[in-house]
Image (cartoon, rainbow, N blue to C red; front, side, top):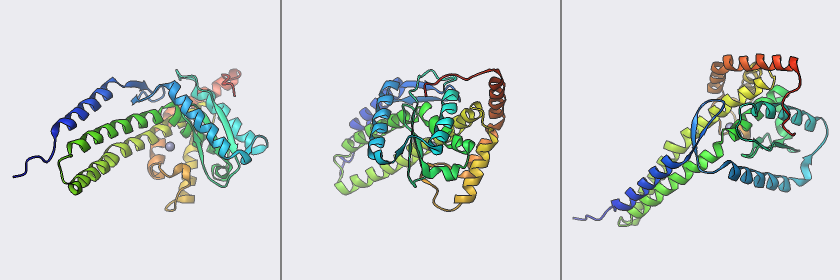
Length: 283
Ligand SMILES: [Zn+2]
């Protein structure tokens, strides 16, 4: 009878190491939603990575970066108001930057350090300032919620666990070994990374809605925007910025649930507008 199928020790060591890493990781409390997330790098590291990716994006698109005109003015106007709203409860000082790239691509993103890139192809879809603020509030919400750092942390843990299992399978025949790794890899992907990623999407929607309302845009416009998206792209391939996001129906329902909270922010922003200028974000 064959007895040396699996070596348990490397697996146990890897799991103990994963548990230790998990328990000793830095915790980030989201100032907007109160959620607690474990992150694998410091704010400073995130900002460095963000800035590098930003410079690379601008370099690759250097012929198409636009720095004046109505599209540029519209984007910077929205970002300025959102950045000020985002900083109200944040303990981290972001270096907000924004670039507009002429392109047919319907895309926009915000890097972990607060660097925002908007491709003009998204503007016919967002249609107005509130629509653009819906998309950008969501993207900025990913950055300020430190979702990149959390994702990195989860990937590291998954890799460590898989490495441990791989060495534990050393005595198995190669084909069987591969089957186990594929099963575990797939399990790790769909059991761990994906649901968390959906949860991050939903948190970015929540945070983005609060930013939008606090920035003085009617939060019902966010609902209207996603309904528009549903009508345009329902059943078809959505544009890139929405491709890994929850279904529009589910998202509209959630936005509806957060609406009372957003309406309070909106009312407070109207009071502030009546009182004087908002916080300077350096943009
Ligand atoms: Zn997202």
